[in-house]
Image 1 (tube, each protein chain N blue to C red):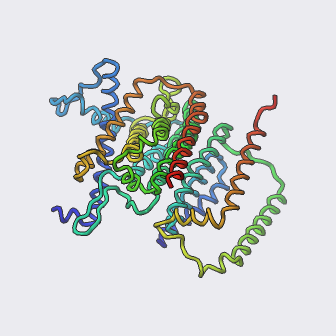
Image 2: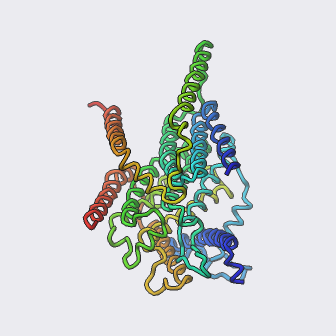
Image 3: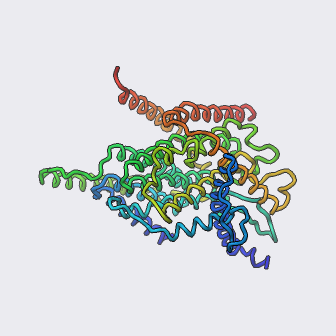
Length: 343
Length: 166
C-alpha cells in the first residue's frame, strides 16, 4: 500500500487531491469559525441549530453544509442590464487564482525513501521562483472583483471595484517590498530554502518590521476588516451586490481561500514554516506544526475582524503610501546593510 | 511544448487583435490582460519562469489594473462612433503596413537573429535569477542605472504636471 502510494505520479496526484480537499474543507470550516467566533466575541451563541441527520448538533458544525445546499438551490438571477458573459466569468476569475496560489507552499519537511526525494508542496521547489509564483498568481485575484463590479452595471458595485483596485495596488507594493527582506536574508526565492534558513531563529524576530508590514498588508490584500472597502457591507455592499446563489458563494470561497494562502505565506516567510521545536523531527509532526501555525493566524483574521472598526478610505491610502511603504523600505535597507556588514 | 506554443501564440494574437477591434474600452482592457497572460505562458514554455513571473506581476498585476481603474473612472461604456474621412483610414492602414514591415525587416536582418546559432538559454529552469542578475549588474550596469534615473525623472514630471497650481 505505502509502496504504491510512493510512486512519483501517484504521490503527486495524492498531494494535489489532499491539498485541494483540505483547503476547501478549511474554507467551509472557516465560515463556521467566523460566525461562531463573531458570536463568541460579541457574547452571543451564534449558529448552533443545524444538526446532522436531525440528531447530532456538534455545535452547529453542519452549518456550512446547509449553507452550501441553500446556495445550490437558490434561483440564479442575472440582472437585465448586466454584461452577461463577464457577469458569469467574474466568479471564476476570482476563484481559479485563489485555489492555484497554494501550490507553491511547502507544508511539511521533505524526506528521502529508497534514494528518492519527496517534497511536500505541489510545485517542485527547484523551479526557483517560489515566492514570485505566489505573487504572480495572487495578483490575478483582483480581476474577479473588478470584472464582477463592472459587469454588474451597478453604481455601488463599481464603487467597490474601484476601491479594491486602488487598495490592492497600493498594498501589493508594500507587501512585495517587505518580502524582499526575506529573500535577501535567504539568498534565494525558493520557499523551501526560506524555511530551511529559519532553522533555530524564525524570521519574525530579526525582521520584525517586515513581518509587521506583511501582516498588515495581508488584511488589505484579502479584503478583510479593517480594510474591507471593496465590500464594506454597512456602506456600499460592494462588488458582489448583484450576485446571488452559487456565484456569490464562489466569491466568498475565493475570499476564504485567499485568506488561507496569505496566512500560509506568512507562516512560511516569517514563522518558520513547518519548523517547531521537537515536533518537526517527524514528517507528520512537521505537517501538524504547519497546520497549527496556519490555524492560529486564521483565528487572528477572525479576531481582528470582530475587534477593529473599518478605516476611512483616505486613512487607508495614507497608511499604505506614507507608513507601510517607507517602513518596508527601512526593513529592506536594514537587512541589506546587515548582510553587507557581515559579509 | 509545441502544442502549448501554438495554443498560447494563437491566444496572444487573437486577443491582441480583439484589443484593437473591440468597441468597449473595458473589454479591450480585459483582452489586453489575456494577451499578457498568454505571453507569460510563452515565457514558461521557453523555460524562463522568472521572466514569466515578472510579466505577470508587473504587467497584469499592476499596469492593467491601473488601465481598468482609469476606464472605470471615466465610466465610458461604449466608444462613440467618430466620423473620419475615408482617406485617413486608408492612409493609416498603409502606414501601419509599412511600419510593421520595416520593423519585421530590421529584426530579421539584425545581429540578434543572425547569431541565433550561438545563443544559449539563460540557465534553463534553474539558476534563472542568478544569471540575469549577473548580466544586469556587470555588463549592462550603466544602461540599467540610466534607465532607473529616466524612470525617476518621468515620475517626478508626472507628479509635477498633475499637481494643482495654486
